[in-house]
Length: 200
Image 1 (tube, rainbow, N blue to C red):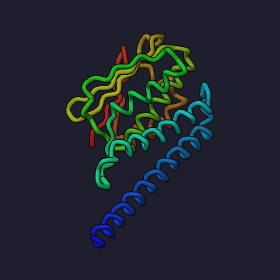
Image 2 (cartoon, one colour):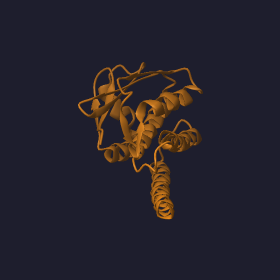
Image 3 (cartoon, rainbow, N blue to C red):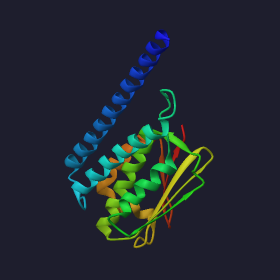
Image 4 (tube, rainbow, N blue to C red):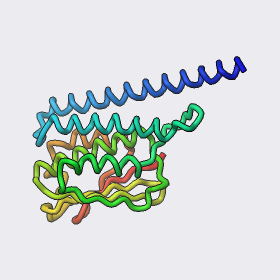
């Protein structure tokens, strides 16, 4: 019995160490994003709200991670339900606006890594910030196909989303960094922009 307790304590310590290390890395990512904001002198609609939204995403994803794994025996799995996260996170964003419409299609079984989920939520924060600067309506759709997550978004006032890169030029340094870390890519269509990334 004593050996089992010691093994459990050792495993718990290892999981806590890994979680704290992951959390520290994500805080450093947040700091890097803020440094890029400053260096590029990007024109945010509201710097403070963007940072608050990112911090909410950071705390919410870890809260969901612990709740989803609380009945497991010291799970080493770092996967989280994208649907559970997005339902609450988009509702959080909608609490300050009615101008976000979203649809989650066939992602109820999709689990993605905590770090990837954070990067996706940070991208959503950037997109929502651009929506605020336009005072526009944002349509979102998230689905999965061929072991990839597809995150599609569109603005009602943009007639051709193939020009989205030009409109969003001042934010693209941050976008490029996050998309690269997601191992994803942007696809520009007339009616929407699609971000696809692999479910690893």
